[in-house]
Image (cartoon, rainbow, N blue to C red; front, side, top):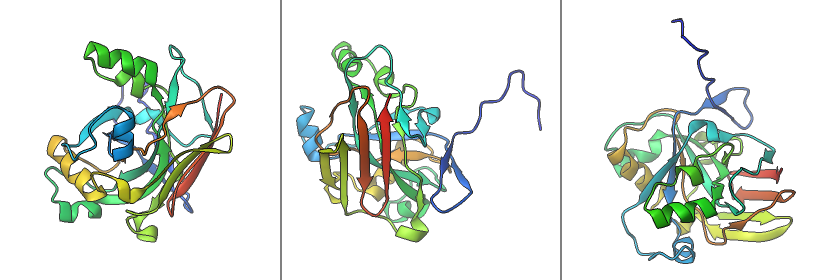
Length: 228
């Protein structure tokens, strides 16, 4: 092993349901405005425009029971999403081959500092300060596609303190799972360890310290955490 001048960063690992082995995270991609009702609530045309992607950092991903409320914001929003984890990749992947690249699926939350995001939009700047902050992407244990197939229909929902806040169906995605992979691979060379958050339905909203959040994607998994 080659020596490093500083300690090498630890590899980010996600739990795998029913296994002692874990999934190493390489990159995190997110699909913006991929449910029509959410596009409308955010003030955008829900028509099938070209897909919009942004990124989080690998170390924003974690299996956790808590979400630490971040600094410099008083308006942090939840966005429940189904998550894809890739076992292989490539560039310009054909749609018909895309799902063969998927290791498994989970459910996660794209936490967003909405007030900072709104400031960045007004200034024409990128969203990293709103999206790629510490612990902003909790994800459930992954379930291998070999066990559940490729879920493209089923309820996706999120509750805050026992009250349903988001609800939708995976079949409402504007860009479907294989299309997401194919389109993303035109922009980036995808690789094993890449994680893709596939978009959120309508109903996004703020959380406060002390809130209990539970979310799920039908047939995929459930995630429960407390805002601290």
